[in-house]
Picture 1: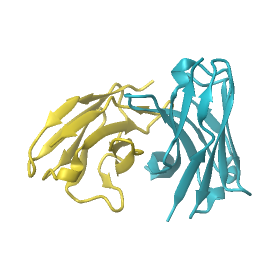
Picture 2: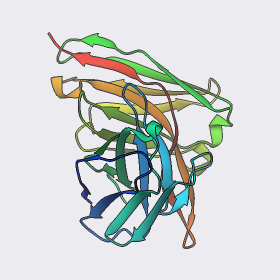
Picture 3: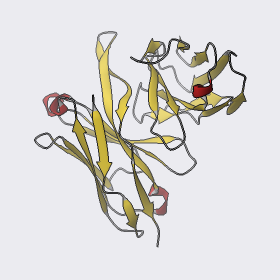
Picture 4: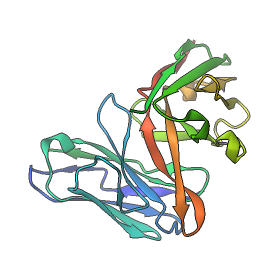
Length: 106
Length: 128
């Protein structure tokens, strides 16, 4: 199974800050990685697919990069509504696996 | 607008069974690949399984913890996706979500891209 490891597990930042979250895959997965945002009591929301493609309707302050085993999600200018937990997910092979999550606090 | 609505959750004793349903609207359901994902209290999401559209073979894949106990099926005439759960264990306690399993062509092959529309979830509690 491909394991995905996120870091950090939590981050506290101010409005306007740049925030970067890292996801590492245990095997090379090309660009087959997605990022999700989840707020308490809500379902996850797809932000990024194929490592860097922005899902329709997602603000452009969110961006993704990477390939192979190392990936990043960047929020260029943190907004209050970005307070949430973020998960990466490898979409390369079964079983589909999620990272452990990064809680972003404002 | 695509909407997914799960139903059927509840309290069940260990060893019991439960059937969850997901009703879809706003999309051509027969063309959609679908997935179930669960999330235990305080934990991250866990993929449960995926079913292809019938035109693509209708095949199902399961995560190891549920294989042999859970069955995913679809009724395209009713726009519904089902999850039948047998031999339930306490570790199956979770919110269960259905989601559309978005696929696309990457480097010439059809690949899974992400779960792009999710339902609101239904809670399953396995306890005596």
